[in-house]
Length: 63
Length: 207
Image (tube, rainbow over all chains, first blue to last red; front, side, top):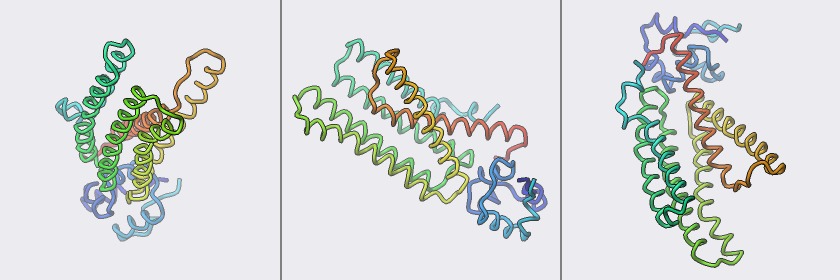
């Protein structure tokens, strides 16, 4: 699954650490999701969407 | 230059892990050649095991710097450290008693339990970690590392068993399964860390 996490984060000028703290996960988790090495669970995907104020499908794209 | 390369030697986990393996290797060689007795060997093993304290500190510092640290990992590390010392103590007492006392079957059974109880503590610690870890990615990594270790011990154990059957290799005691599984788990973590590093080299990681 592809995602726009890096772009969305850059638009808001957020670091991986800042996003990780917002989500209550490790920075490495944000990094792994961003680089496509890990697909988050549905609850975490909802949480990410909520932080960015977007719908899940606006962040995660099915390949 | 990588972050690990910038760290002084005593702050690198690999330095202390290497120290433990080297010390165990030397002590085992001394024991096998009868250069030292079982009591001296045990005392030296305990001293070598003390390196686990700086190893733990260096590992936690490294995990913190790479964004892998969570409160559950800190608790897991503390519990595992305690269980490791319990294992060394149980093993030392069991071997010392077995060497000096003529034990009955039931006494041998009870003595064998001494190092097994801390091993149960280690397994409980790992189970608690999977329950307590709130970060799903870190939990996923721990499960993958455990499966890596399990795959390794099952493959090696089965292969060795057949080699034993065909009388190619000598017999190995079954208590080796836990350390081999734990080593496999550690190798699994290293392999994932390398994969992370490779992915980040290509995409640009933020520390």
